[in-house]
Every structure is written in structure tokens, then in C-alpha cells.
Length: 125
Image (cartoon, rainbow, N blue to C red; front, side, top):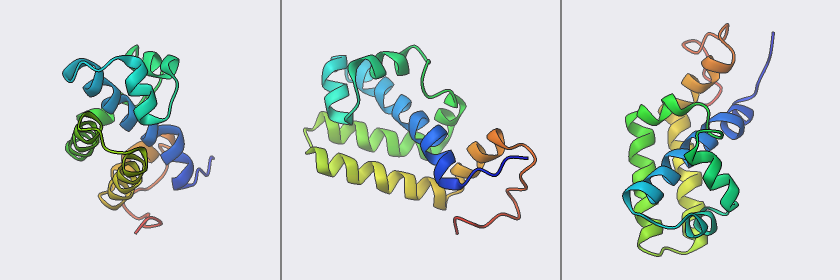
């Protein structure tokens, strides 16, 4: 039996899924070049390409979650409007906190550890 900590699930699954949604918004909706997207998110251009090809962010089903969509759109708009890197980092951190609070992290955790009883788990509360 595995015993992943919420922070591990966040870094292995939730953050990549969130980044994938943001990358897709920036490239497809806002038509930003991949290099600009990479710079804005502090990742490499090949990482952007991988997100677009679905090589990264494999829990893409999370992209259908309303909260993930909402925070990704807010971050994408801030990037398009030229917000500073520090502000974008802060928005990403706040988004992860919200995704924990609203139990989106639990969906990812349950996917990685199917035996986990997420209904009785309140580690993140």
C-alpha cells in the first residue's frame, strides 16, 4: 500500500494538470508563442510542447473540473495582461491552496491511491 502525502500528489499530479490547462489556454485561446508561455510559467519551451502534446499533465481529466478551469483562466489572463513573475507565482500558489481546500486534490489522490478513503481523510483541512 502506498502512502503518498498530499504535497507529493500536488507536485506530481495537480500542479502539472493545472499547468497543462494554463498552457493550452495561452497557446490556443490567447495565441501566445510557446517561448513566451514558458517564460511566463518558469518552465522550458520543451515542457510547454509536452503539455500541449499531453505528455505532461497526465491527469488531464482534472481540466474538466470547474475550479481548475476558473483558476487557470485567471492565471492565463494575468499572464496575457503582463503581470510580473512574482505575481504569477503567487497566483499559482493560491490556486493550489484553493484546489486543496475545495478537495480537488482529493480527486487526484484517489486516482493515484484507489484504496484511499478520501471521504474520511481530512489531512488538508
